[in-house]
Image 1 (cartoon, rainbow, N blue to C red):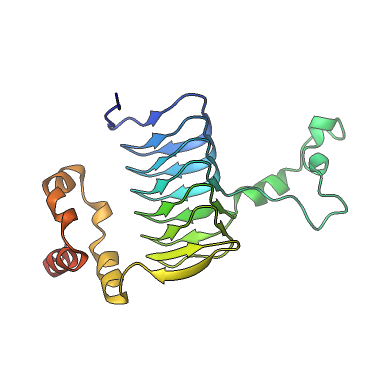
Image 2: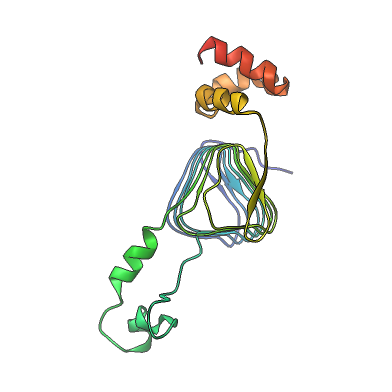
Length: 207
């Protein structure tokens, strides 16, 4: 039986979470690893995801086996190996290379509201995914993705916009993802309207 979500996050078994902030009605799939992650209200991840140094908006749909913010090795050094920054592990020094770790942590991935990250996608450090965007399964995203744009492939490339520029502009101004739980529940049937009916109703209302 499926568990009803609530204000407390739902975290499934075998997860490792370090320095994580979870919003209300969030759900973390089995065997996820999160490090330095903020997951906002109503967002969820599927099974076997790894997220690092990421800020994810509301109502984000993250499918199974997604990798967000994979950390880099130092490619400008004589060696790629992590003995140069995980020095303690090998007994090479009395401290690790904290400056390198600080640099990696600062390469934040920003994923907007109402996004869909497909199965097995990889989003590289520092990338920004706009509101309403879709990342296709297996895509490797190395560049920013505009709002309401669908990207696919390796490396990912945009194939189309979900809606016209006018509709996108209206959705970005309506910001329905900021509505309260009670308002969304009250207006649930409006989410079954055509996109034009929805935007006409709420853009004109100025809400």
